[in-house]
Length: 109
Length: 116
Image 1 (tube, each protein chain N blue to C red):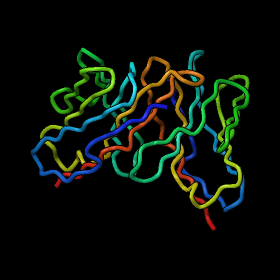
Image 2 (image 1 turned 120 degrees about the vertical axis):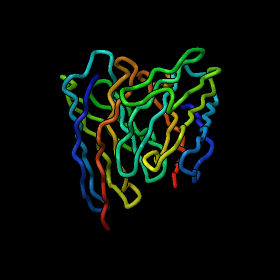
Image 3 (image 1 turned 45 degrees about the vertical axis):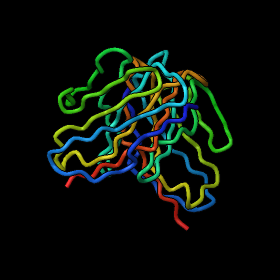
Image 4 (image 1 turned 135 degrees about the vertical axis):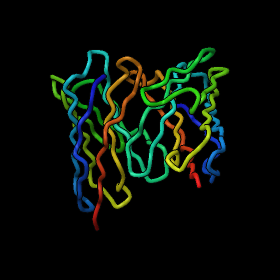
């Protein structure tokens, strides 16, 4: 199982770009990297998924280096509503999806 | 992505009682999972719900405490038995969907249980 390591918390200001990095040193060949956003008392919400290089959608970008041992979620121009916990998940591996601690992002006015 | 509905969304339960949480998916899925999230903590995998056979439990979780049913490819239940205040958590149903780059897991909104 690929274990993930993220910063416990981050602060940012409105309008700034936020980059959250996740380390996953023992990622397997068949693993994908997926990021989720979770607000209090809600289920995690899918943000973006990638395998290698760069992926971009309407809300975020995901950067994955060639060795795939880490990944960076980039949130452009954050707002107060982006305050949440962000999880990096690596899988399917052996089809057990194990979550790490997540990163608590606080966006300040 | 799959749409997942959980019931109840929240409940207050008496110590020593049991509660069954239902999870309904809008499409057939192969893999369903149950997670627990204690206040302020990350998600912990309880078990994989297997259709037509016994669930596969993670270390620290047992069938007597968390019996799981999976009668078909769109429905599962998790029962929290003989509850104590330590069971106060959000319980989340999730499914693996094969769309996109690979299997992606999606979550329901969760069932918030408070045991008093």
